[in-house]
Every structure is written in C-alpha cells, then in structure tokens.
Image (cartoon, rainbow, N blue to C red; front, side):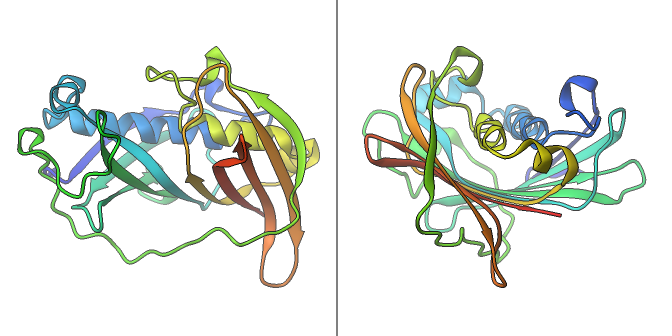
Length: 244
C-alpha cells in the first residue's frame, strides 16, 4: 500500500538505456530515479507551478549508488522511492531498484536541499504553501568520498545542449557520463561499477567550461577512480567510483 512518503512504478529497460554489453548504464538508471522522484512529487501536488509560486527549487547535493548486479536490456524493473523529512536542511530520498522477482539490483540515496531562488539561500523549513508531506525518518548512512591528492587534469569539458536541463545547467544525471567517458575503455567494457559517490558543489551552465581531474587509486583501504571538476578554481563536483 502506498503512502505519501512512498511511490512506485514499473519500467522496462530499453536498448537506448544500455551500453556495449547490453546492460543498463549508470546514467540511464539515474535518469529513471530522477524521473520517479518528479513523478512522486507531481502525484502529491508538488509541481513546477508550486515551486515557481514559492520561489523554491530542490537541488541535488550528494548521491550514493550501490549496484548489486547487472541489469540487462529488456528487464522489467520496479522502482520504489521513499522521501524523508529534512535533517539539517537535507532531504534524503531512497530509491530501490528491484527485478520482477523482488530482488534488489540497486539502491540510490539522494541528498536534496531546498533553496530559495531569489535569495539563493538554503531553506531549513519549507514554505507552508509548498506543503511537503514527507515524514519518513532518514537512515543513518554516512559515506564520504576518499581524500585523494594529486589527481591529474585530463581534459576540459564545455557543457553542451545535450547535457543540460530546463534550468540551463548540467543535469545531475549527466555527470556520471562525463566521468565514465574519462575512464579507459577496457574498464568500462569489461568491469562493472559497484559503487558511485557523487557530490555536487557548484552548478555549471550551458556553454561554461570546467577542468576535469582523474586519478586511479589501488591500495588496501581505497580502490577505485577519483574524479573532480573545477570551474575558475571552484570545485563543481567530486566523484568516487568502485568497480568489480
């Protein structure tokens, strides 16, 4: 039974969602997770018109993704999303991705913040007119990106039409494609992503350019790829990817 905190939908993994191995790309998974979040809010009457009326917007601050198994083309998936009340101005939204038998294939923990679009300030309390009904208690999940020094600049990325959303800034789900495009082809073709940690620090707009940094770490405590993007010396994002 659905509640105001919970919303679910079914999708079929299409060929355009998949990579060269005919399995679902991380970016495609995140696009579906982003869409069910929007669908949930729309179903509760928290629409784009409501945000415009209250001069507010939800921005994604952090993302943690656990990928437990491959998701092949043609899979029937059930997405179940749950929204929590804010703690220190952070709204956690958890999304489980299940196969047709109920086995969990992936889990996404998204940290959202509500921002006043006029003052650009983070709101600890939503305007009454927005009427956010979320009441689930957030889980105690604390995952941080490892502190990796000496990452090397590998390229510059200018944000293009295909990467932006209706706000003219780089869409949350486009970051993972940019990061994966930096990695060796052998890794992306023959290894599986098992963990993604992504922190969004500053927005970057259509036509703007950032410097992309990358470092492969292979040691006992950390093993994976660290990446970050800088715009005019300001950090746009940081990311950590682990593979199997």
